[in-house]
Amino acid sequence: MTTAAKIESMVGKEVVVSRLIDAPRERVFDAWINPSKLAQWWGPHGFTNTRCEIDPRAGGKVYIEMIRASDGKMFPLDGEVEIVEAPSRIVLRARGYNPANDKTTIEDRVTATFTEQDGKTLVTVHLYVLEVAPAFMEAAKRMDIGWSQSLERLDRSK
Image (cartoon, rainbow, N blue to C red):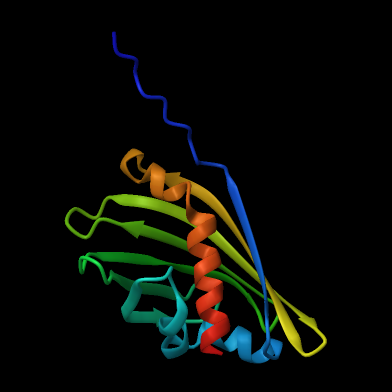
């Protein structure tokens, strides 16, 4: 007898990840809105960003092509900047998708806040899941790890 697999929905879930970065708030914020700097740290370990675009104003577009080093697979992301309050907060709506058919793999709202603490910056990322494809569910459940690694890369890139 077999039982059907139960998939827990990630829609409506929020992931919160923080890291204290040893750099001034303005520099850390700039690493989020400057495309060449964003390309240096966005994504978990083992990924590079071959194309990275951001128009850092409300309504501005975001486009990132992440490449996984282990197999060369591309994970594109597009979206829109919703809010920019330099240097304290940025809100992005981001959609990962399959480049073969343009179907959404995951869509979320990323809110990053930047709090000055004695010359350092506490970066807190709130990731709110809006949509996730069943085939992407397991990866979505590990977003906390991916974002922790991204913030580690941000800390090293500053």
